[in-house]
Length: 368
Image (cartoon, rainbow, N blue to C red; front, side):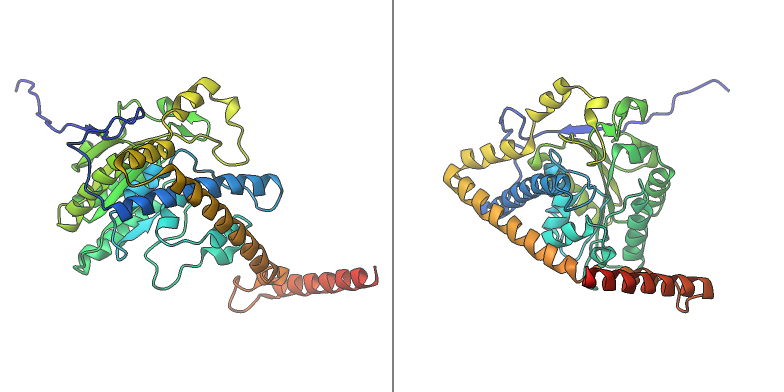
């Protein structure tokens, strides 16, 4: 039999509505109420200022290592804003703005970044999973939630986030394949910030886009300007509506950039140039969104200054509350509480030894 071509007609669309120069495609502008736009802006500004404050706290030794989000806030907020409170969000480790939009407190973030496991406890009513540090490990969790939603015949949608490096993991491919085969209501949001720690995107894939990986699994894929909150919002809303209506999963690739380090244990100057960072800094989503709102008459420069002052005070209060709460959590003996229902003899002996050492230390300090 002769060779023949198999026609694969799917194309990957790129979406940009508000570009880095502030130019707006009014024909694509989503309808978002003024109050919602202001809420999005305030959350974006709060996330940026809190991220900056956390970096100060880390350098002062008041919190541990954490992953900064500067530059990626639009990819967070534009994606989660169209979700309902009854929908599920499954983050990786760099979705702080999305978590804040969904109700996570600043105090909880500070406590978590000091290593207290109590911060990972989700309220029973929560539809957010805790952050997942192992790369791509949260994708099967999201797929399982979406499978359950379809099985129970609810109208819930699940959204999960991951980075470009996660697309090299088996969990990513298994998750997308399962989701497409069973047509479950999940939206996969890839934050392509071009770097998996120090590994550039060119060493992750030979694909022209990450969105096109959706084609192989038989689901819609779209690439968007991840620093354009309007484009991300539009793409996410379409994917969420499709999933809720029984149309199955979607993959959204948000092309964005982290303006600072991978984590505070990382030195990005060792693997990327200042010219690259400055080029992306000119595409910063925060001033872009701010200019759009001012031009639209939704925001004024005076209002920006008032918000900045309010947010600074809000962050300061949260830091104080978190540090007070952590004083009540510093019990070294708690490390034994969740190991076993009944401690084995060798662990019980270790517990006794620690208790004696702590008692001795306390007596020495008392007589100090």
